[in-house]
Image 1 (cartoon, rainbow, N blue to C red):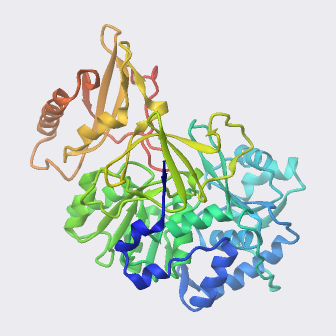
Image 2 (image 1 turned 180 degrees about the horizontal axis):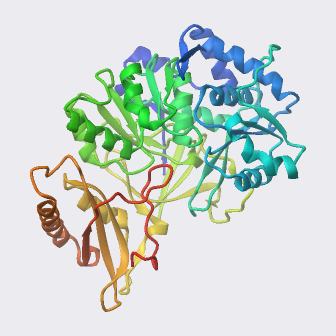
Image 3 (image 1 turned 60 degrees about the vertical axis):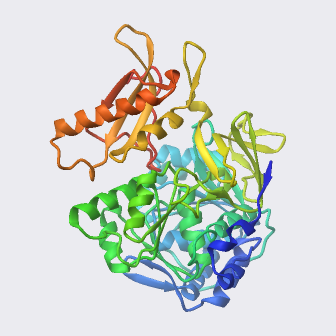
Length: 506
């Protein structure tokens, strides 16, 4: 078992900056500190407008008035796309000691109603464009107060203090089973996740962030929004990811929080147009939510950008570990963050700590905990320096007819080490005779093998993949290799959607 402290990260930040990274028990405590430190700093830039920390608090205070009588812990849904109105409403709700249940912007009407019932919603803040998807709520639950996210009151209601254990947010997750549900995060957990975002990078305070991840995802909410506010930084909200590179040219971010698929796309376009599409001011990319290729780490280093992978869960308020030594240990997800306990049981990572959720809302997950330990479902190992490596998922393990267990993610690492492989997927299929086999599909990296024809690229890639395949233990070797012409299907978090045994891929 390991118990983590922040001292492991001290050497990656100058002493004065490190001393400014302090812990707060609640969002209200943090927000009061921000208002005292940086009242005139620009907190949010959105849709051509800028809002200082003081202005954001003024508008949040007006929105608290609209929320009305809200006892501590009252559950208020926020149903809005990335925008200043989302940030204002979220901040107003949680600094009243209420719980913000964050609904993804794509939810249809039936799901909005279902979530209101499952989460015990008392009030619902909505983006005006989403009003038509509230008809079921209006018909069946007229007692739920509906508040437009763009509304404001001239009367200002001050923030309230609450206990660190007061629930702060409900964030959607697939959890260890893949079934959608809400993780209940306390103020304590949200603040631990927020401060964890400060560790492992040389420059922390007064940065310029670009928001491209959905705020309904824990990575966007905690590492992008909350850590930006905590550090007195400016957050530029990119409303449409199709405009991302245009917005980068205007805003010139110094740090970005991205999933690997976006980092891959930015690198491809940079090669195509022969210039850094992420801008010369960008110094650091925090990358997670899916496996990060060592290739990306090395290529971004060549253009002066540190790409730092990490590992987290919605259930852990996003951040479990971060890798400040990504060049030296490119396959690792880093050092565990402080105030956590970690242990490995039969290869699976179990967690306890200040950052952990209080449980799932509206559903029963009997296998999620064991004696207070959260069972992540992730298969891991530590190296001699205490760095964490993800080797697979328990639910993805393939059991072969001979009884051997194969972790697809572990096998994929070998193929992904080839510089021309962008993504791969190992899965259980069947031979022409109907026998169970392992199969491999890959997507080639657009920036590699560009001097070959399409047919030559596929032939060369297949031959090199076969060479790698022959180096693997017999039970891990694949019997079929396919070069895809299109990307894999991906989840809203840009993770590859794995094939299910018995699907049309078998």
